[in-house]
Each structure stands twice: as C-alpha cells, then as structure tokens.
Image 1 (cartoon, rainbow, N blue to C red):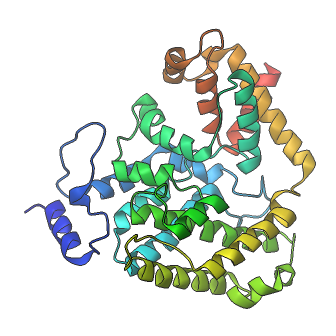
Image 2 (tube, one colour; image 1 turned 120 degrees about the vertical axis):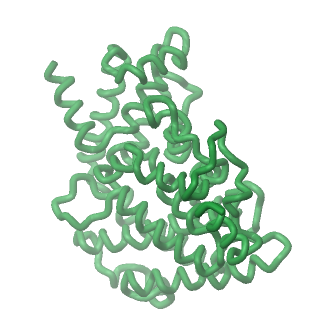
Image 3 (cartoon, rainbow, N blue to C red; image 1 turned 135 degrees about the vertical axis):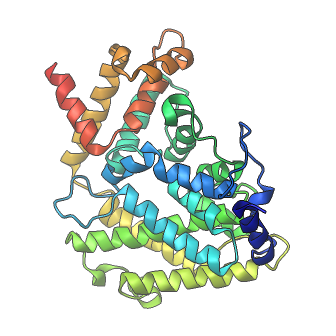
Length: 354
C-alpha cells in the first residue's frame, strides 16, 4: 500500500460519510497517473499554492489601495485567513481538510488589481468591446486554473475543487440559498464551508482594518452586532465559527445536509455588511476610484489597439478566442485581471510615456 493509499484508507475510516473522499473524486478533465504520496486533493492544494496567480495575490488590494501601513490585508492574507477558518470548521465536522484548503487557496485568484473598484472598472470597459461579456472574479478564478495558468495549459484540477472555486460567491441571495439547502450551492460540503468562511473572514478583517486605519471606532458598529458578536476580532471569529460548526452539525443530520449559520446570526452579518458598505466600501476616496478607472480603461484601450504587446501565448489565445472585428477583448481582460496593483500602475505609466 502506497502512502497515498494509506491516507485514503484513513479518510475512509475517520471522515464523515458526507465528506468528499479523495479516492472517490470525480476526477480531472485530463487523466493523470495517481501520485505515490499525495491524494488528488492534496495535489490540487499544492498546485494552487505554487501557481503564479496565487503569488500575485500578495500585491492585490483587499479593501485599502496602496495603504501606508504594513499590516493591512491583501488578497493573499485574506485567502490564508479563509483557509484557516474553513479548515477549523471542516475539522470539527469531519470533512476533508485537504479539499477545503485547496478551494480556499483558489477562490480569489480571479480578482483584479485595485480590489472591487478595479473589478467594476474592468467589467465596464470589457462590456464596451463585447456587450454580451461580463467580468466576475469567481468565474475568472475558474478560468485561471482551467486555461490561463502554465501559459494556457491550466492546472487540471479535480472537479470538486473547480466546483468549490466557481460557486464560492457569498452575496445575500447565496446565503439565503445556503439556509434553505438549495441545489445551486457548491456540490460538496467542503465547498459550502469555504463559501461561509470567505464571508466570515472578510467582514471580520475588513472591520479590523477599518478600525486600524482610523475610519471608524469599534463603538460605532451597530449595538446589536457588538452585543451578539463581541468587540474584538477574536471574539467575533470565535462566536461565528462556533455557531457555524454547531448549526451545520445539526443540519447534516437532516434529509438535505448542508453547511449554515443560524438565521439570527445571518441577519446580523447582513446588517454588518450593509454597515460596512455605508461606512467603508462605498465612501472610499472618489479621487482614488477615478484614478483606478482611468488606469484600467486606458490599459484596456491601449492593449486593444496593440494586442501584440500581450505575452506571446496569450496573444495566440486571443487570436483563437477573439470575436470577428473586435480584436482580443477576452485576452486583454485576462491580462489586466491578472495584474497586481503595482504592475498595473507601472504599465499605465510606461504605456503613456511610450
């Protein structure tokens, strides 16, 4: 028995029957020989950890663009925090931690430079070239691992990881679906864990960063939220993660097992999210938003005019995917979406100076 087979046997003995077992994976688009030492989900985790898109997250904005301090979150630290929270929940529910970790590492790979401001700008300019197009970071995350990594070869991940990455979106409608156990949720419980862990992480650490930046005081958060979740980051995380574990454990005993928080806590998180939009997300410096929009739009137009500036493999991919008479909008979108904040700013200055 190989080390991989031993691990698979341990999974069979110790994981919940509802967990995703690596030995029963739905497999990959391209067949591969099994690894001697690692399960299929462990290989996916390692591929994501070592891919270039994951490293670029270190220089992509979470909320604060070009912050002066060193302790604000980036997309990379956010992904690590999501992984930690998700693994804690998965371990308590006897789910597959390797699958959970892999999905967490891959869930935000498709984010643009400059946070959601950059995503809005890229979506708008992309649509100006292709009215039917749209840019959504979770769809782009799947495109990165399926197509763009390894210069157009992708990572050939398992179906379970791809499903979790593509369905991690966590808007209010998604969370209501989670409460009701509807089918459009991630197919695995591990994917559902990451969906919740993502929201738990970003609401908590964005509030923490906003206090650190002096944009608000802890006492300014709504009183019911302070009373229910506590005043510190540690208290909030402990309260929400504990509820997720306990509520999910109960839901997994029913006819439609799924991961969830209790209704009252979901309502509190919705209130906290609305508060964050009103106080932090939307009021961000208007001049800064205009600057981001200018950088993204200018880069898109310049690359559309001279697509040969794209990396050679992406230029070739754009030649295959480009719409007749419209050049390379998909390839240009892919290239800009993959940029870090500082690289996008550098390219903007260089192209304007050329």
